[in-house]
Image (cartoon, rainbow, N blue to C red):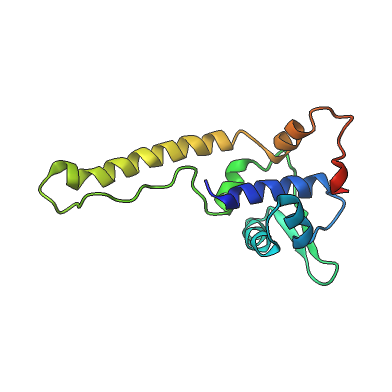
Length: 148
């Protein structure tokens, strides 16, 4: 998984938690601990996938769209065109006479694809609401102080 996935999930949790606000890329970048350009790149992908909405102008920024209990991490992974497990560098050469050299790349790709599919199934079981719930286990403490 890539850093873009982490940035996307973090940003969605912040946007959901601060659902009454439109947050700029600068505000999100400060909370995610990255730069605003990286935030904008990831947010463009989330917007294209319909997970967030944007507002233009000097008061512009991002807001969460939809039900946080219905947005799962597989949807986030799909939005950023990510894989849970990347395909390996293709070792060997399919044109070689050696069965190991000619068959290794295909076998490893199949294995990585199967692990990726299993990972996606796991991601589908966790929502943005689940993550926020894990962070704020005690419902009486739902303010994150520095966020406000």
